[in-house]
Structure formats: structure tokens, C-alpha cells
Image 1 (tube, rainbow, N blue to C red):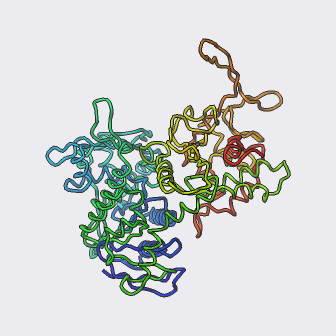
Image 2 (image 1 turned 135 degrees about the horizontal axis):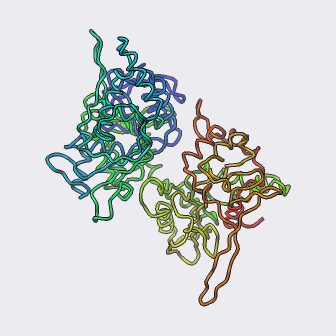
Image 3 (image 1 turned 90 degrees about the horizontal axis):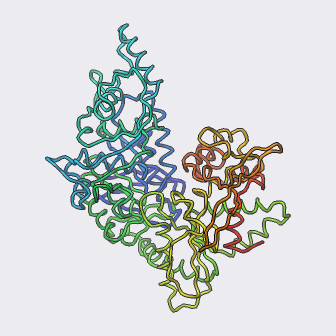
Length: 627
């Protein structure tokens, strides 16, 4: 299979690339790998090229270039909601539960079903997975009920072009009847609730297709099942995939097994298997953007072995030597400044493999020159922390350079936690990094004395944070290190660093979206208050709400009066907080998408220094030292 690649920002000439089953692009960061994948995806969505191909794109992380473009595509086709047969999809991990369920329910001979059965996570009876259950939030609002009622009136007058005649509505009607509520006639709304969906019910749903006009030719598209769920989940109009869980065969009668209970490798491998099961065909092109990241070697091999057996073709990117070994040199293409090189006609491959094989050792060696190392989920999080701390000390009169000099003495490394995506030990990835670093340092003279594992709290209970040593240290994690090297596992008291950007002064009128009925009035953000503690209104404004608790130490009982922590604000869902902050700190309209430092600086300039949490100062004092 050959693709003609459009010019990209780094290489202004079109290029032709010949694809095998598992063609894989490698190259250093900024070499143009993602630009090429995005170009293919974009040209397919705009129907400029690849009309005869069906394309499915998957990214192991949140790739906003792909997701934003696909969302814009969905919005453009909202008026054509009857069209359930898409020819191009983009998925990230938020789709994992739904796609894995659809794969085991609809593809009895697929890799997902085979994996679940062989691992003992599912039972099969007469070709049916009879143990896996999808629990998902569903609703049908009053607006849609009115649209259906209006359609009935129009049809009574002879108008047949109504919402009731669309493929989406016909499928929705069958889905509700078989999976949500029997004998439902769209006369009343369905309030949002969690419903259990079983494979046997899903198989009874009639996934309708659009009826073609006389003489109209059908073009290559995927089956309508996925198209229906894409439409139904768009903006959570009907289904809310975020409010869902996937339950497998129970380990015990009272302990159901959920997708999050699986290991890191099982989780990611299942999701990749689901994509292949649901979409593989002779004319399918899979686009995988670092889909092998975080996989152990055995699962890396399983992933590439499965791709070598597909009917269609795949184009992917990787940074793993293990993947390059599994793929084979003949299937590698090297990117340098946007230009594609064959391994047979350049020395780019040898240069790149040399970089990959030494990169970790080089990174470790460089880090040993620093006394303090911080591991953090995202480097932007460290930038936000720096700027919040500098803002909090604005009244002290120190120039920014004073603090920048202190921050720059700390080495900061991006290491994802993975805590909020599936079940694992808190800070597990960071702890594994520390073990590898310590092995590298054996026998070396190093300057490093402390490593700080700075984590998002996510779903960790607030009671698990705080020790006698430090208020933001995570309890119960023991790490075996040498006497010369101390390792601290730290966590924000709020779900993640962005929660500390919530400011009454900076949000202005938008603070009303936060101070709504979901938060009790005592938890609202007030002007010149940092939101750390619940407040009570007094004659002269707002004061911190205190509580007195009985404390027993041995046989002695004392009473302590402390402020009541504002866990309502600290535990707000990350998506909700992001929806409030994104217009202020993220670029969504044009490249480069995502977090914008310029927008962020504009936003933080409006934050009053008194509204910054004491956690920011405490974290600085513990890692870097008191002012």
C-alpha cells in the first residue's frame, strides 16, 4: 500500500511512503512523526485523500490535535445525525471500557474475547460472553422528547423527512427497548442513571443504516454499531462514557473484577485488541501514535504480533527499542526534519538506534549532578507550581529571578503516575523509575541526595496524605534506599495542580460556574480567600470554620481545634475544573493546541496573591527550602 504524504511544516515537498502491515516511524522529538500521522488523519476527515480507505487513529495519551479535529468533524455533521457509518475515527483511553465491551459482545472469535476467556475473566456459553457487563450512564432529555413529538405531528401531515426516520433514531429506539427500558415510546424524558448492559441485550439491538437514494452508491464505511455510540456519547447527549465501569467475571461472589483491577499491560493490550477486533478489514488503515508506550516486553511482542496478522495496514510511531526489534528493520522508516528515510539508503537508523540505546543512561548520568530531583506527571505542572509560588510571594518584593535561581537548582523529570487511568499502586511508575535510577548509580560517586515523587492526588483519600514529617507526604509507602539517598512520595491535597488555579479574582464572573449548587455555600471561593478551608459568613465578612476533635495519645486524651478542610473544592472532578479553566489557559482554536504559557501568564496576573493555597508554599519549603 502506498500513501502520498502532504507537505509538512518541516518538509515542504510531498512524499510517497510504501506501507507494510506494521510500518513504524521513528525519530527524535520534533522530527515530524506526529505531523505526518496528523496529516493523514486530517486529509481523510476533509475527504481530500484516502477516500477508498477507512482510518482509525489511536493515541496512548490525550493528543489534542487529533481529538479537537475529530470533535469539529462531529459538530459539522450534527445535522446529518442519521449517518452512523463513519469512515474515520479517533480514540483515546477514555473509550477503553466501551470499545472492549463492544468487542467481546460483538466479535465472538476476536482477540478480546479470547484474552478474557483464557485469563479467566469471562465465561462463554454458545458463543456468547455471558459474564461481562457494561455499567454506563444514560439519559434522554425533554428537548429530544419534544423533537419526537413534533416529528409525529409532521408525519401526520405527510412529511416523512423527520428525526424519527433517521438511522440514529431508529437505532436509539431499539437500543432503549433492549438495554434501557422496555416499551418506551418517547413520551417522557429518561433521567440520567446508571444502567447495566449485557452482551445478550446488545446483540438484540437493531443498528440501522442510512437508506440510500435511488442510484446512490455506498462507499467504504465501518459498521454502524460504533457510529451509533460515537453519536450517543458526543457531548454526553445520551450516553456518558466517563460515568461508566466495565465488570468482568467475579474473583469471588462479593468482589467483582473491574477493568481498573487489571494490570497495566493487560489493560492497554485489551484496548488495542478491541480496536483491531472492531475495525480490521482489507481497506482499513490503523494509525497508532505511541500505542506501545508503558507496555512490558512480553506485551510489546504480543501487540506487534497481532498487528502483523491484520487484514489492513498500520502506520505507527514508537520510541521503544523492543518495538523496533519486534517490527523488524525492514518495516522501519526514519524521520529527520520532516523527511522520511528508508533504513536501506541512509545511516539515519543507526544514528537513531544509538540515541535510543544510550538515552536513559545519559539522562541518569546527567541527573546525578543535581542534589535534588523531582519526578512529576507533566512538566507544565512544575511550571504552574513555580508561577503560583512566585505569585504568592509577590508582596515580599523579591524579583522573579530570585526564585527562578532556586527552582533551577532542582532537576525535574516527567514520569507519568498512571494512578487515575487504571488500578495500580500509588506512584508506581515513579517508584519503578527510582529503582532503575538507583541501580544505575551503584558504585558511582553522585551528588543526588533527595528525590521527590510529586503526584496528583486523583482518587487517593485525603486521609492518606500527611505525616509528622510533612503535611503533603503520602502515608504507608516504604522505599528501600541507601542512607545517602532519601526518597519522598508527595501528593497535592487537591486532585491535581490545576485545582490550585481556581481563583475568585481571576475567574471574575465565571466563578459562578464553580460556586453553584454542587458545592455547599461554605465551600465557595470567596475574594481574598484561598479555598483551603470551609468558611462561615460573619458580620465583617467570611471567617474560617473550625472544629474541635478529641485526640487520644496513649492513655491521655486532649482536644484540638483545627480549621475544617475544604475537601469539596479539592475533590472536584478534573474534567469539570478543566472546563472552567481551559478558556483561560489553553489554546483550542489554532496550533499549537493545549496549554499556553502566554494565556496562563495573562490569567495568573489577575490572581490575588492571598488566594493561593498554603499547599504551594508548604511544597516549596519542603522541596527547595524556606524563604
